[in-house]
Length: 122
Image 1 (cartoon, rainbow, N blue to C red):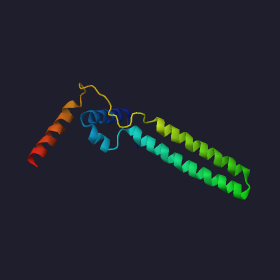
Image 2: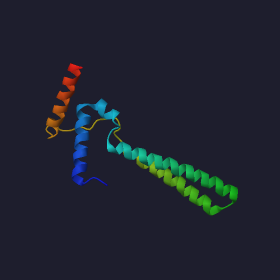
Image 3: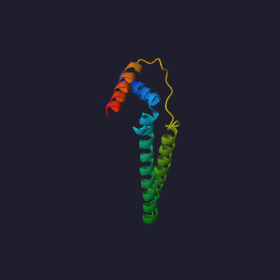
């Protein structure tokens, strides 16, 4: 079940607030959603290229030109998805810049205070 537009906006806002307040922790969690999309695209690309190479080898071995064409198209599609994945995360490792006047500042401030108290007590 997908997220509604409002839920997606809230999630992105929380990600930006986390990245601006504690960039090391945010990067440890895996970064923004675009990194996951890039990883998925690159995974699809690798599978496409491997299937394409296998199809080309089978086409040469079995002398089936149609299979060779399909293998070539799979390789091209794989490289397309690899390029798509590389373009979807141009700012990897850089935290998003946000305005300090966001409404989530109170919530994050409370979490930060609880964390500081826990560190002082422990």
